[in-house]
Length: 200
Image (cartoon, helix red, strand yellow):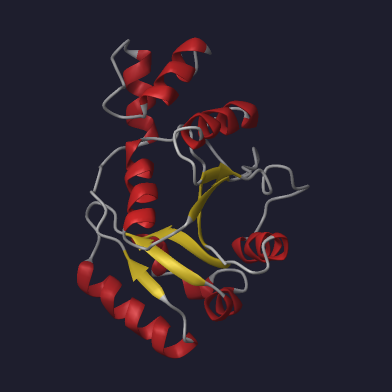
């Protein structure tokens, strides 16, 4: 049996903030394997343009090649409609029945987790790894963590990952201005972006 961390997101692009969470999940939460899960994005529900799925997946594949224990799942992208976290986790669980799944999420998401689609079931059936973000409220996060653990019997591990205040907008703006982005994204991702002239 393996401990598997599920790290989802738009990943447009994957940056060093994501990488710090990935590495902390392995080192601190003892995840044997990390699954990178690019989200399916509806063009009717967003105001900003999202890079094509093929490029987002390819950038994640560049990251996965850097590690022996990281893989990419296109389960949400390949689905017919927008996926809910609970349904996605159940589908991954079906494919990896002996393993224990941990959903990796930002500290801000924890505050609303109970109200998510089948949030109660999600809390009862899976474990969570919490990645603090810059500016997060420590006391409020701790209070919510204790409340959810007591009510649902779930396990919530809080990481001590290096807080990197990086945004996709910052990266895209830098590219448009012709600036270097190696201090914002993994080298392999920077190379891919440059080769395919993304975000120009």
